[in-house]
Amino acid sequence: MAGHSTWKNIKHRKAAVDKKRGKVWTKIAKAIIVAAKHGGPDPASNLTLRYAIDEARYANMPRDTIERSIKKGAGEKEGDAYETMRYEGYGPGGVAIIIDCLTDNRTRTAMFIRDAMSKYGGNLGSIGCVAYLFDHRGQILIKAAGLTEDRVMEAAIEAGAQDVESPADPEEDGATFTVYTDIPTFQTVKEKLEAARFPIEEAQLAMVPQTQTTVRGEPAKDNMALIEVLEEIDDVQKVYTNLDVPEDELK
Image (cartoon, one colour):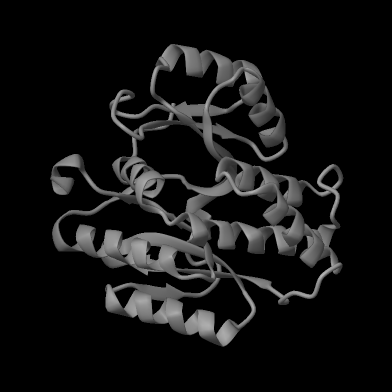
């Protein structure tokens, strides 16, 4: 089973508490618009749109907001033309970072990304420079409160999951179990876990690091600050990293 990642769990706990709902909804709306534009407005035949709608549902996005975004993407309403962009690079200490964006202005997005990386000692590289350090997998976060590792593990494996990562302390506020799947079985596993009434906090196709890069001291602080700043940029949809910050560094 996958090892515990301190930074990832801290990150998700912080996101669950601190993220601004309006900003999250704006990012999800962009994803819905782009998915509907490229694959059509029917989630039954457009998996990317189905995933985006599910993400909106987990974020408690209003149904009418979801429907407006689908109509924008399908051309029923005028809307901005968004395109996908990916940036790759390194944070301090050789930490790998992937930044996925949806933007209607490449120049603006590039400027914001470069400014953030420069401010915190990061460096942008060419496409592919760190992607090989990650695997494209399904990732499902289940709220840990009240659940045992054995129960989650058994249900996930029976549903067809590849792996389960347990939090260091399941009773800690905001702790989550992370269920990993391969891409073809992601939707099936998610639906089975939902049917079993597991409290899913987030489900997505993600870039999952193969190994973690542990950093301490100032590089650890700079990496955490860099990732938070990147996630605050409106055009940034997802930030993936192999950063691992030991628990004693966070005290």
